[in-house]
Length: 311
Image 1 (cartoon, rainbow, N blue to C red):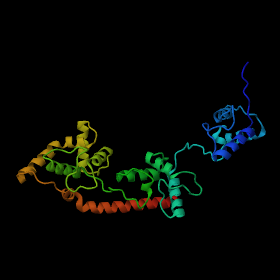
Image 2: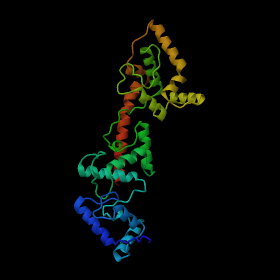
Image 3: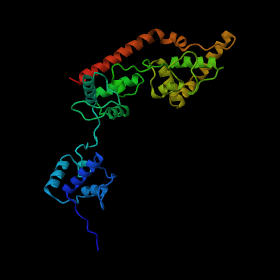
Image 4: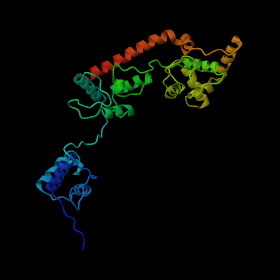
């Protein structure tokens, strides 16, 4: 004898949901324990999705309300707190407006883990931060300009970098000449051996690492000058990608000659020279000023963006 599938009523389903909420203080999911026998929340969800519900006035009205949002009935969508999954990218001006609203309300810049309480918006700071980090933002001139500004600073976009008070560790771009000077210092301190990404920095170069330098080379976070153009030309000839290893390969002969010449002048291996002393002839005078100007300009741009987004 064929099995007869019983159609449920929407009133019965809401009664079962109310009993579950009364006992467990939460809305059921398809995996939740079912109160009673010979049924399950998974079966109820399937019945809602297949329209195996008595077509009463209440259920017809429910289907019409969901259809107006492009949705079909399911167990989760009976929950008044149900939020439709996001299908569109966030808009950068909206994010700036949310941040401004949070600052006006709480008196401080929102952290990634802070509760989201901005009137007029439904979101989370964690989701916003992730969208900024992964670039899930709709293209607009304001967003593209911000991405370029962050790339020039060697900083990835995130919620934190929208804070005008944010200060990345490195605001001044590295230069090819400066990196070559650091390599030469390493050679002097290590008997002519060139560094790898796991090597320790020679001298007093604190707050930096060969791994970070290699990443700057591979991502192009290098000052645009004649030395960078020369390095790019040498890379094109060698068909290598930019990295610490490829830079050493491109300038190996020059670096070795400079190391030997330095040894010839001193008669013996010299002690490590502090990083600041090595690069000061190159850009120390202009570097400090450029770093200050860059920091002020970046802060001004971010503040101006925040102001414009609210007009």
